[in-house]
Image (cartoon, rainbow, N blue to C red; front, side, top):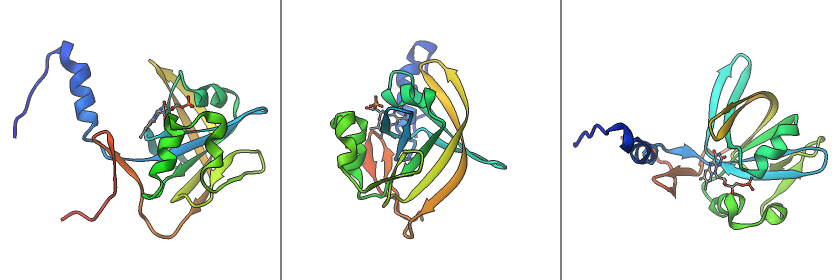
Length: 169
Ligand SMILES: Cc1cc2nc3c(=O)[nH]c(=O)nc-3n(C[C@H](O)[C@H](O)[C@H](O)COP(=O)(O)O)c2cc1C
């Protein structure tokens, strides 16, 4: 194994290369304000605590989702199944925002937030905090309700491509 220590001017490229070695579950984050609803593919989703049950998401400030999230009170993290690669592509730019919800089996909460009925899981959150950092905003969600589907078979993103998981060893 080659271990390479990089100089400060090489950190960006090395950081990118290191992040390719992270396997991250693919989600679509959905939210709505009084006028608009929207969904965007995201892997920057992390469990934060059990007490209270909470998670965090990281949103690029240039995205439409960030704009809507600013005024939204709630959002949903829809965990994708390994057969939902097409939805991930659509919600990360292959399909214009106004046409995205025509693909997939979407329902709506009482407050108008779309959720994917056949996702691996739906984590319905109240927006509890938002912390800007650099180009992104870290949004903390307190989990209020959870929807679960039986089989655990998430879609994973690794080395800039889609993967599926299997037991190690
Ligand atoms: C696999 C994958 C994971 C992504 N994860 C994130 C993420 O965690 N946060 C983010 O801001 N953008 C993420 N993106 C980029 C957004 O999905 C993409 O910029 C999207 O087109 C922005 O949509 P919007 O401006 O319509 O909201 C990801 C894209 C892909 C393909």
